[in-house]
Length: 616
Image (cartoon, rainbow, N blue to C red; front, top):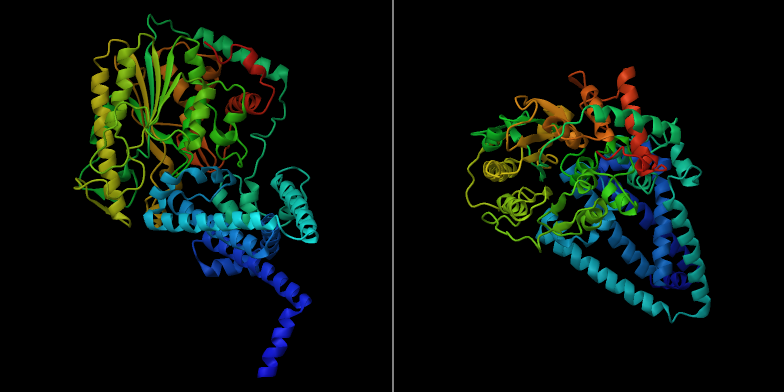
């Protein structure tokens, strides 16, 4: 036995054996890490992970392992140590997998590459995952980064021969990672290898990750052109479209004596739980909301996302451009597109040309979704956030500034300014988490799972509804005509799988909306069963209130009569929902004209900006 141990010790001291063990260790680590990412992606179900890796999608799995290997070797070369690099790699993978599981749980969406920009949002991360997991992950991450930085420092004193190997490795791995990052380029070899067996699902990134693995789905969502180029796109075609709708809009203009105030209110997660099968309450938490909605133009809005995606709904409402028309990898225009654009037309830019003062109010921090940069690009005069808002009251233990306080901030803008106002408010009171905010709950539900969160959420929307009703009552006393568009951005991610199974998928994407006129002059204000998409809000507001419209809004108004709501996988026309977009000749012409204009602005030559298409 002693001789056996001696031989083993001698063997381990052999350089070739050491290299072999290190190689095997690195291979095992990359395979284990890919299995872990799949495990997180598949809801911690071992059977699914095993079948994905070694039965259903073996080729894609090991292709993903190779990509992870390149990343691991990059960290090892950067640190100048296999042990230090491997430690940093392991911590990165563990955190990434945990984040993916959490996002899938709360929002039914996987982690996207662009989500990594949110890593500095420590406050929001803490609220989402809870104190104990947050601080545990934070401590582990900080220790790993400190150890990694120390490793980089120590590597400066490595022998020259080792440094040469290290630099060579860095050059090779950086080059490979750079090449991999262009995964969506037409001739990318990694993309071609994935394409041999991949089953890409453009309309559902959750299914994309499920079918092609975490690595495949993650790569699919790397940088890409915003939209595919329409077949007939040209300067002449854009000129034809813009001229056509500018002429039509001029024929439909109504001159008003005074420009009204316009207020957009995007209410966090505002929706009615009792719209869902499997959820009942002892009383209606939205009673105050319906006191307003049932007397004005209102209905349901189709949200692109469930449980999140606030910025995308906001993008659609302000720009009137649709997420459905983007390439599926364009997951968050606020961070991936808008900051890179020199100019983007919106309701903000339109009203600014009419001497409006434009104010954005979001009682939270400024870095979320790059809102500070985005609002500046859109043309807002000021951005009021949690540090600059005057009214900061909260309701009981709710950590967020109340809707009532936010509305008071809006009223100040209307009272203290002589110019007509455009105010865009994004509320926070009803944001997750949905527990511990209130001492007593006035609402009790019977539901299939997650009763506590649903009851707390109903208390949240009760306070939100009450604040909205009080706000509209005050607006009736404002002398200047004031128009309000109010909507919920998405449902909260609190409903159990049992509830989801009891409902059509589209029901998990329907929120409340209304358009309110303090002078009661809206066209169609007795219609309360409307169905719409957020990119229709501005043209609908202009049409229903008799405001002078634009060529762009005229196009959208005509499209809305044919296809009242659509997002990827959800299309509403002819009074029914479908999974696919099937259009008649007239609908297809309108849809293609809209697509042509959006492409022209976000990815094309911007010919339409040189006309009056986006101006009154």
